[in-house]
Image (cartoon, rainbow, N blue to C red; front, side, top):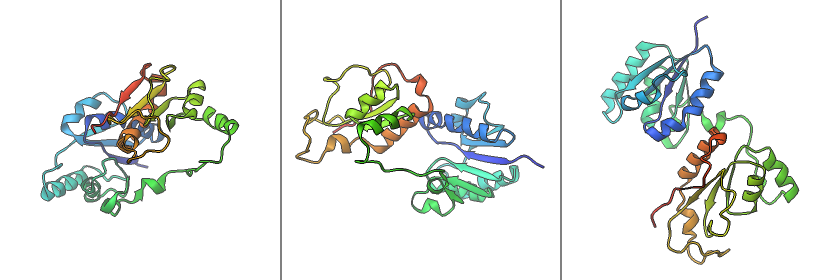
Length: 248
């Protein structure tokens, strides 16, 4: 029986590619006998030179080069191998279409807008398990038990943050109307995201304007920092990280 052929369309940016490495590691662990090919922009290929997760790295040639280049590259990939599974990490429709042109039998990726059509399976439906909304339902005792089993907490500047820190759980903290000036201790495993707006810190419970100190912390910043912390909690920087400061 021939080995499973897997095609991975890698991210287009250096930081995104680095943050994807825990996923690459997990993919290889899950498919140890598969032939895994990484398709990534040529300028990023040296970043993964020597990495043990791929059997081949194929430079991406068609990005931002038009439809004909996309078709040519898709057909070249089709001639290269008969791919059983494709993992499409970029969220562009072109990356998903390229896998279709390459004849990938099953394509898994994030479904956003029209991009969902070329995918065989969307990540949102492929995830195992289910999300639980426990807002307003847990007392402090139950919260402590839940956080004790957690790998990561993403929270605003509230009491749950301090419980997580006491239990040794890494924390990504979205700092809105408050400031670290009053709680500057025990930040070894805490990463802080904040927006650089003139009205913070105000310490008001109810915002009289538009709550810009929270709304201007982009979800993408939070997701990226959470994935970084989740993928390597033991390698947190050891100091408080003030990142994601956005211009007002």
